[in-house]
Image (tube, rainbow over all chains, first blue to last red; front, side, top):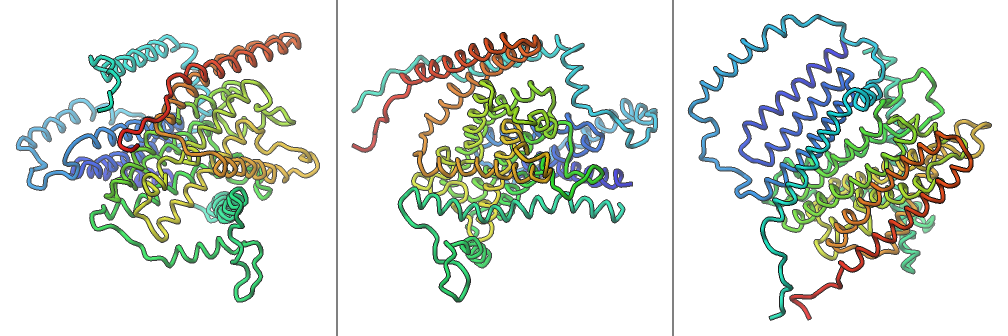
Length: 173
Length: 382
């Protein structure tokens, strides 16, 4: 019962956050609404006893992606948005149709076939098991991912440095 | 939800808020007194018992400050984003309060069966995840004020907090490696009987890095660039007055308590201390005493050190703390493997080698960085 109430509250928060994020003209408001959505999602993970995923959701999406978005927005012009520009593009009905088609064709069947489980089974603490899994069977995947991220990091630094030569000292005029 | 459960939850959470909010008030008094002493002043000494001339060393100052803050006018700038201007101090306070739940405080009124505020397997990782939200609050405040100094302060805070979060987490990783758990209570339990991690070379290095990074994370001096009064007029809370300002103040101090509490849990043995066998409830006292010791050091540093420059700030995080903390992880890894061999001789050698490596690395990095930092050039003033 408690879980159900929590589920509905968190889902409402997530859906509202997502809606506001899409509809807001003001970019900063949109980003913060998106963060509310992430927070709601993290709460849902917590409800599913997936603590680690919930923590990572907060750490990566709210902490890192959110701040990154804010930084990017600070570099753009007209943060507050244009009032006379339409928020809904003309082909919105086609988009809705495509979304409905994806839902019906791909998602509806698996959702119906899901076994109805008890809400809260006693589960062993998940973080430790996850750690063992990451180091034991999936260690190669982890290392490859780390390598990929390092490559991306070095690439980003190179891109940021650009082709500009090291500048000479500014001579006093 | 049953009534008993509600009562249990309240018993677990309300004391945390009450204790730390009360302690906050007197920490401000302590800080002002200590700073005054360092700067050869007297500090608050008038406000004591009302309608008398009894000063009580100014102990009434926090109450007077609180009353002043509540009744002060709440000013919102015309161009400001009213909603975010209101939300920012609240968003600053919530994460700082929330992370207090992860500290392994064994209050005497909690027993085996009672609800713990928040007992998670991954408490440490949750702690870092939620303290990261402070950055957003600071940015929100800076942006919503529609004031260039506020925005500068907000941007400074975001850059600084992101940079210093990395050494902060990496130095905590060492303890997690050594214990093999992310559970705060288990980490504290591992250090029972004086076996604190700060007494090992790698633990000591990690503790120093953690403490410095914690100073930067909580915007304490000498890392108080986001709120530098002499440069950007208090930064992100320039446009805040009244109770919203008080909330920022409260959030900052609660964050200090929380991060000191994590430092105590990770490196200073949690509630460990003498006399626990006779009086088990002493562990809370020891825990709070250790937090206070760290806070006292923070106050002392604020009275002693000048503020860093922005280039020094970033250079210190990326060129000194980050390499050192990564090296420290390697040292701790080798030490862990040496410990598995269970030999006194090898342990001594490990100590000597790790001390030498860490000292050498610290002084080497210091030498490497020294040449790069030039004295400030004044372009527009002579």
